[in-house]
Image (cartoon, rainbow, N blue to C red):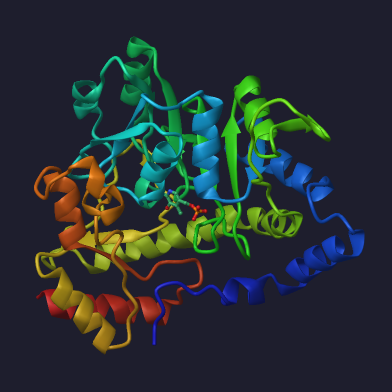
Length: 365
Ligand SMILES: *Cc1c(COP(=O)(O)O)cnc(C)c1O
């Protein structure tokens, strides 16, 4: 069996450091907030090249609180990719605002900047690009459109820890970036976790207040906030893992290069990487006209492949009342029907990788 993602070996590799981090918290008696959360925030901000990082409970909350901090509310519109994990849309809906989908670039799978302006209305408040599959979205044109129309930019970085755009790490290209530390992400906790990074001191302060019941001083509540704090146990674990993130992303890059070499001319559409992009290779996504048969074949030979994502948000029952129809976002729908994510992760061994390549190549030819 070759699992899609091995979540046990990372712990074995770092066992001593992680065990010490956990027992440090258990023995400290600090179970909400405290020095480990502060230190992780400081280290993650530096890693991302941002002035501020604020830990929250998960990636969805990071997106939601970032939007709240930018005063997004009922009647507002937020431009989102038509192809993304539904969390991107849900964060907008949680504010009472409307997610307005824009189709991706057919090669990079990230939001197509040339299609954004047509979707802007007087109600548009924020552009919300996603760095999908760990590949940076094309930020320069997105930022130029935002400046021209007086819009804010929130980036969904949940899949892209450590990725670079034109040489600069993601973390402060837009006004604010939302991160998830869900265990399967490139920087993953041993439970839920999330953060925002930003260079804007006021936005950082707003998220800090919102995550803690709208309170800065205990029992004094400035706004109707939320309970969305980063668990110090997770912060301590994330500090250990952050020190290994670059090395683990390097391993992902080597695996991606090997897939690219081993799977050329096999009838698959392989990931396209613009020369300004340094992806974090969260996922290695291919397209195949007979995707379902390929998935079934891989399952039969014990290879865990997955679909990211089988149903685009506009066709989910959760958005049935928005009145979308099948065929309305053909690129998102094509991705849902044809894409397949091959096993990927820093602990995928060479022998398994070769086996995946052999089976995928044999099926496709
Ligand atoms: C994982 C993910 C999220 C949500 O993160 P959680 O921590 O699971 O809430 C949001 N957006 C994208 C693109 C993701 O992949």
